[in-house]
Image (cartoon, rainbow, N blue to C red; front, side, top):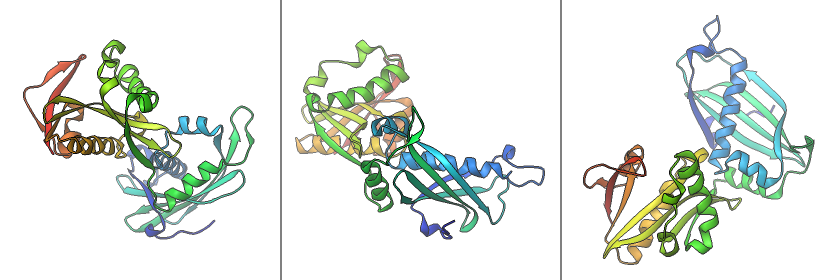
Length: 289
């Protein structure tokens, strides 16, 4: 097993707290749970690359299957320990991808892991070459390169990708009636989309003119598997910049109450009383540009 002993050897970390149900009669983490910790970290590694796993694998026309998992124990974790699980892609072979994991309590390495995956046809589970684009994405992530880009344009340019995210978030997830989701503003709005390195739209929003000098941002949506990755903020900032360029001095939006703290953190303040829209409580919020 390749040894990576220090936290500085890893770019990616997933943090977790040991639960009481994960310790054994010796009051230390039961050994099989460490593989679960590393597997959970791998799932977050894909999110860090802005890749919704199922859709990414479908686009790459394959899937990943574990071929080998090796764990080396140095010390034990206990209930309530806060652990940082580091993951690093070490190398990509013809059809295999090798990850090394390190589980740390503070700066102390407790457990090391090597996971060998094989890229394969999901219908037959026979191996096939790792797609060049996946190789590039893994290398770019480990090199510290950005995993998304934000673009702006009209509905004709970005409507397919933006519409897919909005349909999944608002209509399917939040059960907003579809006749309330689509309106005439889409044809005249400036749309912003965040795209991953597969070209998939993972977040979107739009900007329309509410009044002279006042822009209205709306239809903010992020792929449910990738929330918390900064994609919504990137879209919001792109729309704010576009509003400033066209001469707006302020922007406003209708925030769902569940997202109010997100917008507060980005400089928005409530304006007026909460109200109901599409069966969901909202509050108007504004930000000076």
